[in-house]
Length: 256
Length: 310
Image (cartoon, rainbow over all chains, first blue to last red; front, side, top):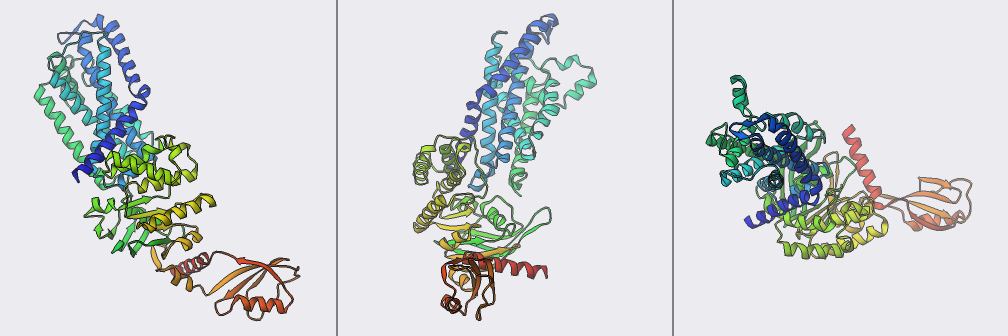
């Protein structure tokens, strides 16, 4: 039976990966172009006037955050659009009719999201080499945080896809929640620059922990203690993982 | 062994609509079974519950003695389902759709490719295997859903209006194909609005109306309940008015060359022809007004509707 589930998992994961690689011009290239513009404008043009941030050249400071932003938005959008698309055209029923456990459906979709998040992250990192020197303080931390974050936001995308009832619903959360939290998550500035009250408020933003632990992996410096950041990410993963499974088990949004 | 066993199945939707009101149904292994009913009777809800697409309110469903609740992996592996509406990714190639479905059932890649080739060839889709599904005609899409439902070799196949919108020639090809897989041992449950199809193919039948089973018997026994049949007669000579026949009350003039006569069970066609000949009326051709099962179906569902209204 485990082999049966393994084949089902590979089928969903392969299908999801094929889906975004087949349309790579729409899925991989746009975020790379967008981040390249960030590097040019904020890194080169404005960054040179800013000087140093947290002891780093500004472009070096923002580079990990920009890579992380790409990972977050792409792992999220891959799953939300794919899952909602499957719901909308009803081909999610292909999995529901088959003996595929909800855990396998969850992991299959999330694998697609993680694969896209990491693919775009690697592409953006390569583009960053045009603007900044490549240096990694701790590759394992970089890899671990990238994987955990993409896993987390792929699940968040799945939850959005489960609840979405229209194509508008799949853009509301990214536009009004994800983007503000990402921009306020310490990509472009150190929270040490903020007044004490806003520093405390910022600690409520989960993306801050991901950006800072990722920056630690690249640069060896972070506003947040590494272990605290990893624990926060892990806690969010556990909560969303359980929530996703409960929703799939109940058939929320997909079974009457 | 029962291929399908449903006990006291209830479904009430969030809107309060009671779609199924305690259905009991058994389908024997190897049967070709018709599940009939008017639109909104509860057929698709019933099939949705068996297939795992709709949550039941209460009751039990067993497929080859495996509960869909407690042994869902085995129960679902034994079932193939062709839904009423197209539910594949229209942008995927035909071959991928079928192979992926096999993958969801845990069929290894090599077997999945082999079975996909087999069914796409049998259903005349092999030359379209690399086309996106959206480019197929309506009939081809229906056949694609049948190939997809069979790729994991289910022992029970449920077809929810598989020939809807399919031309008559293709429909007959599909009937032959379904006959063939039924002969090979696959139990088939069919819902259809083409009652000629059900009468031709199915050995047993259940009629569901307003969420309840109102008939569950063999097709032969069901058709015996038909106590009259209506025939359309085409006459050689023109008639000015409907003839007055001693043994037949319901005679309706359709036009000057054709009449409609209801023939009760106690009278034969010979009686009718004799009476007409006695009046100098020559019948050139005749046909059933509607299919026999259709006539019975309309009577039964009308009766059930009237009873519930009362």
